[in-house]
Amino acid sequence: MAGNFTFTMIKPAAYENKHAGKILDMILQGGFRIKAIKLVKLSYEQAGEFYGIHKDRPFYNDLVTFMSSGPVLAAILEKENAVDDYRKLIGSTNPADAAEGTIRKLFGISVQKNAVHGSDSDENAAIEAAFFFSALERC
Ligand code: DAT
Ligand code: MG
Image 1 (cartoon, helix red, strand yellow):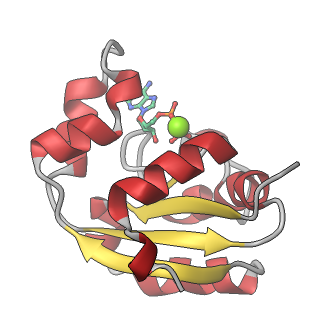
Image 2 (cartoon, helix red, strand yellow):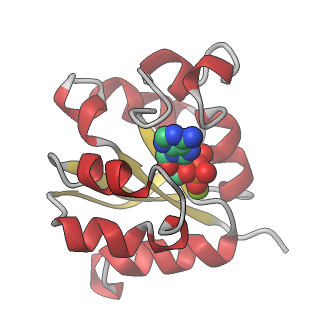
């Protein structure tokens, strides 16, 4: 059965470029409810742990450096079928390939600076949400 929450981060470039308000509005208008949210500045080590699954990929070091370069806005988003519906709302990993009207198409500036993270499975949504938020921080 599909889960009812996913995890997202507005990445440092999109946050720095003042797109957080517009992205949150798209998330809310897309039918998601914000269950938890906070601004976090990850250390290199913390970003490395979050993206540990990619540690053997050639882009890993650049990705971790970028994700620890400034604040990220982390959130848990609630909706039926949240993981798949959010992946549709954000679009393909590379903004150049993302469908018109998606968050990455509108606000992404490169594969790395693709505006937002979105969990790829219910299992990873649970792991990623727990990485950032305690049970007390979820409303
Ligand atoms: P997604 O974020 O769509 O789940 P992913 O899990 O494959 O994509 O990769 C995680 C992040 O790593 C992605 O958001 C941006 C970066 N990335 C992926 N492929 C890349 C590449 N070929 N070059 C540079 N960065 C890349
Ligand atoms: Mg991924």
